[in-house]
Amino acid sequence: MMKLPDPMQKVVDELSELPSIGPRQAIRLAFYLINEGPDHLRNLGGAIEGLATMKVCARCYFIHENEDDLCDICANPARNAKIIMAVEKETDLLSLENTKRYTGRYFIVGPVPKTGFLEPWQKARLTALAAFVKEELGGQADEIILAFNPTSLGDFQASLLMKELSPLAKRVSRLGRGLPTGGEIEFSDDETLGASLERRS
Amino acid sequence: MMKLPDPMQKVVDELSELPSIGPRQAIRLAFYLINEGPDHLRNLGGAIEGLATMKVCARCYFIHENEDDLCDICANPARNAKIIMAVEKETDLLSLENTKRYTGRYFIVGPVPKTGFLEPWQKARLTALAAFVKEELGGQADEIILAFNPTSLGDFQASLLMKELSPLAKRVSRLGRGLPTGGEIEFSDDETLGASLERRS
Image (cartoon, rainbow over all chains, first blue to last red; front, side):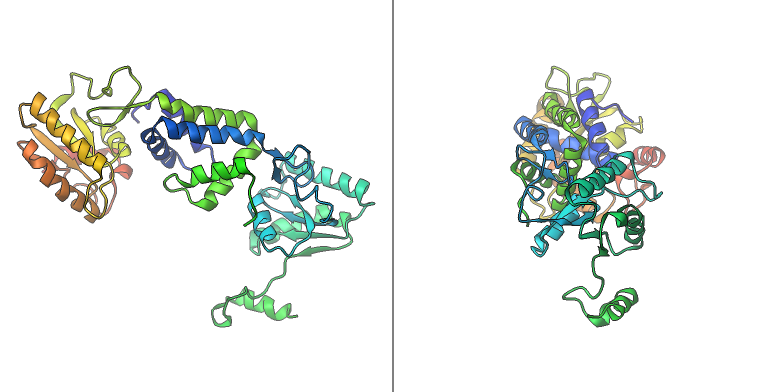
């Protein structure tokens, strides 16, 4: 491969390390950025450095920019601290929060490795959650919701977390399965339709 | 949609504008970056700002970092200035250069719009090329190679450029169709690409 100039190779290396960006896309992005010119480079570079002002919540691990250790949701006394929804990632939290139908708190587990062994930082998060439940909720939350995808991987993640979290709550639940609103019976797959029969309400 | 903090929204907006990155991927990347922490943010942001030291060649429009207006290829007296290969994009140039079978110069046209109307900056590049051919090559290059993808879009681009460039060269050629039709230059192996250089027609 023809050697790229150092400043460009550096950016290609950095971009290649980001999730879902491959080395070829990184090269194309770097060429694109160079052609955009210095003003745009300063805007993008400065914006990325500006993310350093963001903080990660000490309780649920969502992001925030207030002065405290806690995010806006965890710091909000109107949100029920005794109901905790465990999610895989921040974007899942955003989607659930957008429903405006949930008034409890969250807990971001991070992507559970397919090996089934949690990463050390994930174990640290679970330890901190257990300490919070013990100290602030008297030993048990009212409910922990395992909000993982309704897929075989999601089922696997949920069963793994079930072991860790079931001692911490009076009830552990998962998101309901059934027909997606707006969907049609005729075009639903067997699994979805079967679940909707078994869990009819 | 739940409102994102300003520093994060700014990065999401900037990333969404990049080619091949959609709004959802931009949000996921921003969350990833925040979780990576300040050191990583400074590295990536600084690297992107560092691209401002890169220059675009005044003759072929490839990138370089030397003091002059010309890139390393255009400044190299061993490269035949009378043979000019027109390419769509920098990554095509990289792939062709990697064959080590080409000793002429390049000319980056940029992506030709499907409308068939060249952008003003593309017309400016062609005007500059015509001036160079007139002043430095006595009115005609020995050969201009239209190195566009062997696809219907590439054929269209080549026919469009043929009109513009045929007065500027004794011979206008395209890469040999040793290339698998329907494939792309960027993804071809060196041997196939080298053969297409030798058998250009």
